[in-house]
Length: 368
Ligand SMILES: Nc1ncnc2c1ncn2[C@@H]1O[C@H](COP(=O)(O)OP(=O)(O)OP(=O)(O)O)[C@@H](O)[C@H]1O
Ligand SMILES: CC(=O)N[C@H]1[C@@H]2OC[C@@H](O2)[C@@H](O)[C@@H]1O[C@H](C)C(=O)O
View 1: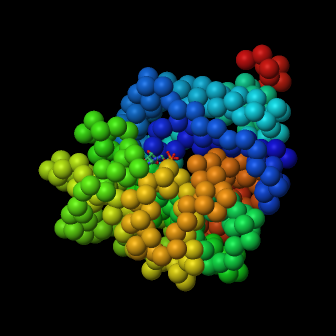
View 2: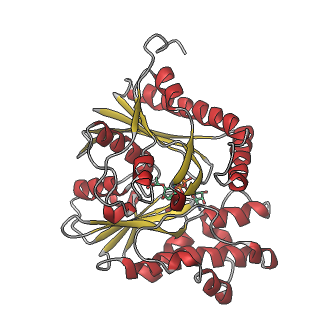
């Protein structure tokens, strides 16, 4: 079936959407993909809700700003969806909707994604699978990462034998290790681009370190890097997931923008290297997806530490759409009751399906 997948990541840059022809086990074909950026007022509403979420921290009534942010998410997703539907020339049979994460506190079985699936189902006239993290969290898993099942399907499609790894460099970075026997190990390695984006934005130097040029002009502060790597995230073993705002940045104020960016770029790469000890065997090749794969300074830092790193685009994939495609694939799996998460990926006790389905109100379909 043709499934449309959506991802709106922690970077708050926009909505990624992609179509995939899949039965939830194999990828038969890729359909069109698109990215729609948020307007400045939309981003303001999302940033406000994200800030409020950190203060709220899951205790008491939800902040009022969540309602406006949810409307922004729904509108932007509808815009993005109609774009690829027009390009494909047909409606999908199913939609996979991640929603916007505002807070992730797996230790309290809490992960908040906003955006009403019913609004999308009614406006698109297509059933929507969403809330794919919740069953995993309730069963004691981390609720993240979700993409490993899709990474495994990509590896199969590419004919790549394990051990290999997929590394997604979004706001946070997460990896999927695929063994020679198809076994999966996955977790968030640490920061992706989120911290780099934050210092670049705080200095008024744009939204991110375009082409890694700022970091390339700076010097890594070894003492700061060592202190960052002392974070408790790097001590634990096994499945772990992160909130984008889990690492301190106060030190950056006393450094030049270039040195701060260089140090944070090295931090992202070092955090991936630190994860090697948690893998059953070193990957033969790393396939790097997400926005960070467009940052040559970061790619070089990874190659220096990990060896053979290729961008997803270099191996014929669409690096910017992998997560959106994954949501499509997972929606198809959810519909068929197939597992979304595994002991090796989220720490859940057994392979577990997840997600719930929102069906369109047929009276509204095509009208709204
Ligand atoms: N040309 C580029 N040069 C440097 N960095 C880039 C470039 N293009 C994108 N990025 C980085 O990638 C980020 C966006 O990545 P992506 O869209 O994968 O994140 P996301 O989906 O929001 O995050 P997550 O995977 O955490 O949910 C940007 O904020 C920026 O840091
Ligand atoms: C809670 C949440 O939204 N986590 C995101 C985030 O962005 C990257 C990393 O942290 C990953 O754990 C996850 O996204 C992808 C889609 C995942 O669940 O696989």
